[in-house]
Amino acid sequence: METKAVVMQGPGDLALRSVPLTAASKDDVLVDIHFSGISTGTEKLLWSGEMPPFPGMGYPLVPGYEAMGEVVEAPRNSQISTGDKVFVPGASCFGDIRGLFGGACSTVSTSADRLVRLDGGIGPEGALLALAATAQHVLATGVLPDLIVGHGVLGRLLARLTVLHGGNPVVWETDPGRRAGTHGYDVLDPAYDQPRDYRSLRDYACIVDATGDPSLLNTLIRHLTKGGEIVLAGFYPGSVSFAFPMAFMKEARLRIAAEWTREDMDATVALVADGRLRLDDLITHCVPADEAETAYPTAFSDKACLKMILDWGGTA
Image (spheres, one colour):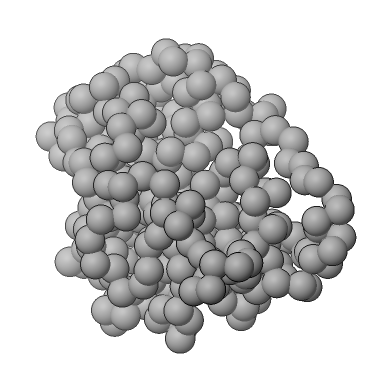
């Protein structure tokens, strides 16, 4: 069998190609992908050539760890059935082409235990569940952020979950377009985030950075309360450093929130299913997968693009 897939041949070199699809084992599920998302974090680093050499990383590679689709074949004893809508966190089923991510394709073959069953009525928003579960993972310790840095999709999901859990976060965003609108929480230009008396910085007990920009760390430490915590929720391709004296005076704590767990995903799916967590108004661009060669650069460079989704329907 073959499948159509986005293939990154190297930095800045991407094309939609027919690639071999590894034959499914007796325990595998075959899924027709309906929608896949483009990550402006790790996939942007693959595009730019800045991605660190993690095990299994390299070119050629099928990107995509944010996908949803419909099961077309399933083992008899599987908890997943033919016709189920599922979230697909990628797959590795493309022969010699790396599939460390592997969700940006028309069909995947993968084990049933990697899939997450979704409500049958969900559409392209199903591809956002990876980011929503990542946001849930940040909050898994029970500590709610007072300040979230960055109002992209991850920042918005963090803020929505924080409000849902009883918090009242402030969000910093430098781009005016991303500050616009009514959100249920304050979105501020960090240059104007000052306390009322203007005699000192406004301090926060828990700051979550969702930007992946390591140059912000010293600024964030200055805004910590004593004993406060900074959570790094973005992905940082190189060294992360900070000046020690201010961190010393603040007795700053640093936590890294990495990949979501199955528990995070299950909790997120439940919140979406009962309507408590909204995924609406996060997808700004949805284009046919045939336009992948222009969609990826747009997702990485256009500030007006919060989330780019590829629609695999009709891709031959």
